[in-house]
Structures are given as structure tokens and as C-alpha cells.
Image 1: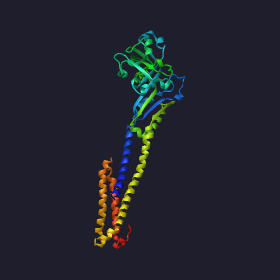
Image 2: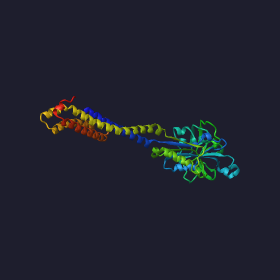
Image 3: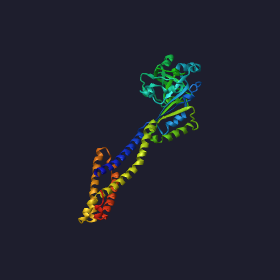
Image 4: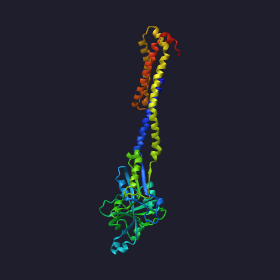
Length: 396
């Protein structure tokens, strides 16, 4: 009987423990999982006759930057019709100014060029548009400049990073002041030079690519296009990823943000292949838990009745010796309840030792004890209402 009490209560407590652990793990995964999305021009719709192909409109990027659904946005802007002008060229006149066209790219953070890992293994600046890739951009900063200078707040010269060959061709060096021109002209300062390593493919303006911060490009161009947008979805939206995708689809077709011939990918594999199966398991456990609780409670009462029926001869002897029905019920019922309470007490002692939460023990223990009380009441009533002679004829 003691083992029965232990097994019955432990089965309910352990099931509750599994349910709570699964729920905590699901909540942790939802809160900590980083879902990354990207928006790029559709390679299948790339127009080779276009200088830049199909790009992401800047209005869409702005909506993403200010969206409460997104915690981080990295974007790269591009402008194929831009001019780098030295002071000597500016004095020479417009014909020399417009002699060469530069491909101008703007990155929203500097990790792409100096970071480690995947970010340094490829340049998404022009790869998204022209199909040209590079394995690394090697930087050489001018004296007195470092990564922190690759920002532009709207004041002073715009910081530029140029290809070493441009510097050599135009007799420039990091630290020199130049002009950049697209829709408007602005003062700029070269802070570093880069050399490409392991280039694969040919970009039309690759060798002349000028790199500057986004605000620098926005100061000379009203509506630049995006060559790449990478964003992190706010973890609070992880549970409603489908709503987020619907939100993005609405953005794609909003007036002025039309996103024809671009593609969006969202890496939600953790939700689909890890969290979703855990949630299905949790739903099954939550469905089975009340069934198990009711079943164990009924079994507790049923076993109590059966065990009291086995004590029929003991009840007959007590009745024959003059014990009252009430006394017989109290003795036999109390004996079984004491054994049941001993098992429950052991459960409270053993639960923390096996890693179970003690607070989860109270409810299943309470149900088991209720079932035992009801079964004890029914069992003692059956054996005390019958005559001693009838009780002696009960087969065990």
C-alpha cells in the first residue's frame, strides 16, 4: 500500500514537472531566439541592362528602421551615378568633373569591412546587385583615423573609404579632402583605403567603388536604393512570426514602397523545427494531465475500497468481540489513512532529492488523498454495515 501511494503520487508529480519544464523551455526559446531576415534584389529578375538592377526602396528601409517589430537593422545603400572630385578637378571645370563615374555604396555599420566571421568573408555591397563577390576587404587607415571615424552626423566632411587604385590614379592619400557629387555636392575626407582580395566576377564599377556612411550618401542623394537589408526581429514578435510576415507583405505593397522584383527570407528554422514540436508535445501533455489526475484519483479510491474488503475478516472478528461499527470503521480506516499519509510524507521528502519542485506536489497529493478518503469511507461503510457472519464468508 505504501508503494502504491508513492507510485501514484510520483506519477502525477513527475508529469506536472515535465509540463512545467517544457513550458519554461518554450518560453526561454521564444525570448532568446534571434530570428534574422534579409531583403535582397531577386537574382532571377536581375536586369543586366540596368546599372544597378532591382533594388530595395529607401522608404521601405526607413519603415523597417522605425518599426517596433524589429530590434536591429543593417542596410547597405547604393548609387551608380556618383562622382569623386579632387580640388584640382573642381578648379578645372565641369568636363573633367564628369569624366568618370563612380559606384558609390553606403553601409550602416562598419563590421562588414573589419569584422570577423561570415561578415568578413564576403562583401554584400555589390554582390547583391552585380553578382561580383570578394572574400575580404583589406583596410589601410590614414594617420589619426580609425573605425570610429566611419560615421557622419551631418556636420563636417563626409568620411570616405576608397580603392587603393583610385588613390594612385588621382594622386590622393588617406587624410586628403575631396568632393563627392550625385544630386548635390558635398565636402568629403578620405579616412582609409581598401584593397580587395580574391574577387570573383566582374562588377562594372567595382574598382571605383566609394564606401561611405548612409547619412553621407543621403546628404548628396534624396532617395538612394538599398542593395541589402538585414534585420533582427524583436523577440517579443517571435510568438507571432506569422503576423510579422503579414506585416511585411503589407509593407511590400504599400504606396510608394512597392517592392517588385525583390525577395525576403526569414530564418525561422528554430521556431519551425525546435519550438513547434515542443509546443505540440506540451499540448498533448496538457490534454493528458487532467485525465491522469482523474484516473489516479479514481484508482486511489478503488484500491482503498478493495483493501478494506480484504480486511473483512478482521472487521468480523472486531464486531464479534463487541466493537461497534463506528469503532471498527475508525480503526480500519485510520490504519489505511496512516499508511497513505506515510507515503505522502515520503513523497515530500524524496521530491527535492530527485529534482522535483515541492510546490508541484501539493495539488496531486491533495487529489490522491481525497480519492483515498472517499474510498476509505465507502470501504469501511461496506464492511461495517454487514453482519460478522456475512463478512466471514467474503473470499479474499
